[in-house]
Length: 447
Image (tube, rainbow, N blue to C red):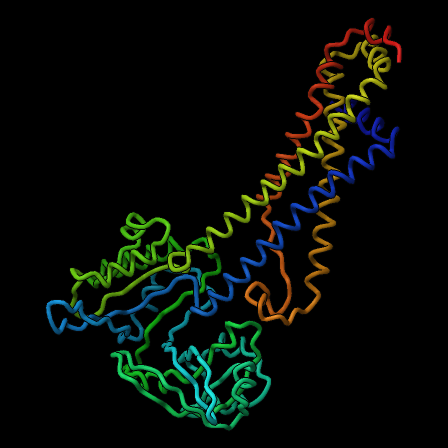
């Protein structure tokens, strides 16, 4: 096999121009496919990351209480509240969940008013003094962290500040609803303005959780959502199921992810909601709803699957075009070397070895071309990532205003295997002819 490999390398250098042209064709095809796959996957991952940051994590636990129905037609109002401040955290710690951050927050959508102007906002109540992960993520462009400890302070995004013409120290009104559905309004002082890197972050505002809870009638120490940001997102389903089972073992009402997946495999989040809102669903006290980010937004998984399918279709089309060129080229190469093959056969080379020589040449050529295409794709995608894009229309798919890419080692290896298989098939005809040719037949052939 070593001799075959050495001969194959020597043969490739004999016709350098032809070998380089074939390698460039393969490299271009692999470059296009890798760039499309990497950039599209990166865009979807950025969208996923922004949505995950918006909800606070990859596993979400909510506490839900159901008020008694007022009449036969009334299903009963559901109130989103967790009164036991430490219960879910203790469950997570007992299960030794490998998390990056834990969050407890209350969130309410509403409208921020200032000097006759208004803007929609998702106001999140957090611990603005001790929540280090949140504080480290904030990029303050105006105002001071020292004011975060003051009651009734609010942190808004730069885009919201520009829209409402707000400066730190200004007082704004936030109109929303209590957890029981009544209209309510609160007055907050802007303590800081933070940089927002997307349209989504432009809608988010932060206030002290106790101030928001007081406004929306959540008792002191309570919150509405507990989130876990896992170090490995692939563990989301297993972690959610483990937490759900632990809550069930503690004798507390909890939703069932497995029943939801059976009921609606394409959208478990909708099935989980039915477990709470259906007329026959009645309970006393708290009922915990446990779900993963993918349960709530299954469309992102579908988009990622479609991206990979489209990428492989493009890869196959490009490779088929390239393989036609390789097949025709090696037919010509066989014709050019036919007497050389006869000489090697006369000196003792087996027919199969002669066939493997042609296949080895083509495989080496395609590997070199694919490596060059991969390197070129990485360079081009890295260069694209250095440019700052300020267009809000595409900000969902960017990270901090920059294009990013995401490549899977498994996908690249699969593409390499596919490339090698197709290359071997492309030269199979020429290789079989070389293997079947007798020395006398080859030496008698006139070119």
